[in-house]
Image (cartoon, rainbow, N blue to C red):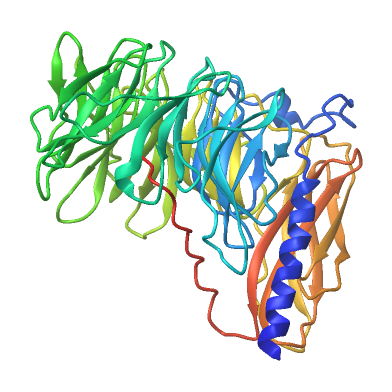
Length: 519
């Protein structure tokens, strides 16, 4: 009976948070004038600082950010399913309803178009439906894309600024039915043909000239890098000196980057150019991106453990980005200016979000935050835009770091709720900031026990504040605690944490759901 009650409470908490996120507003009312003067820190801030925007208070699996500073992300919701969100510059939107769906993010272009796959979830038969491809934009809404067969999944890794999408579609459940495909801007499906003697093909990236890259398999099941031109005509680049090769990125110059299979344990990144052939930064290098300057970035894995961040180009060779004082570093993303972002670990084991310049100069992004709320720490920088904006994982969930400042919505730190005892008042606190120092704020806490949002106490002064509340739980179980802070113009931000009430150990980390094929 108690177990049933706990499941019911968790389901109710999921519905509550879905309602909160449905009304989530990071400056939704952009047309309204700001209420009061902006924080002096924001108006006179040094050039190398970032305003903070809360995106979602969850773990993110995939993130993209475009040249306009719009962000798309895939996160794990309270239902333990993956969902896709989009930040349009002012507010978070769900392109497809999170209720009873699971969605995996594919890509985002500079026009604000998303490509992703999704399926309905039937609780009685969770895997009874296939992953279907979609595109979405604020201007055109949601569009379902055709696939090769009703019985097969689709996978979408890329969309260019012409609105052309590439990926893989399966005619059935057999992996051998997979083929590289392209969807036109008008949503017409065409197959990317494999040359004679090659089997299934997989398209992974497309540039602005509509040239696609990916891989095809030969009769011996070895992967060969391949490029399809704008008319879908294939050119096999081959295994490029390895046992196999997969092309993962291409740019406007015709450069192609990907991974070579050199045999266990040596897999390595490669950079290929039409006139100069293949080059590699060395063994055990993993590539995460290619920019328009012909640079690739990623990490070099030490077989004995650990990794080192790197930047590589033909012109400059290998640039070691690893901070000398730290143990492990990894690049997650780079932009066309050669600026990389990622994560580094120190001897104490804590993760820190880092940014590297083209020359290798390293910056801990925690030292570049504009007036952060107490307790907010950046753990990893996940994606960087052409304009330098960054999406990062933090102690307060997924956040956007904006060079031009944040939005007019409150910025929340993590919930501080250390106790989990039964039958005694338990204290909760949360720090917040607001760049509009004349705004006043109110807050609610939903304690996850079916009573709904309850008023909380707010103490504040000139844009800095703290929410406090206390609650007594009388039954064991997991609770989804949701705090909502709303300013005097109606802009709101939510924060979330899960707590195991009446247990002495911390909650186990939630497992990420299985993703379809991806890079």
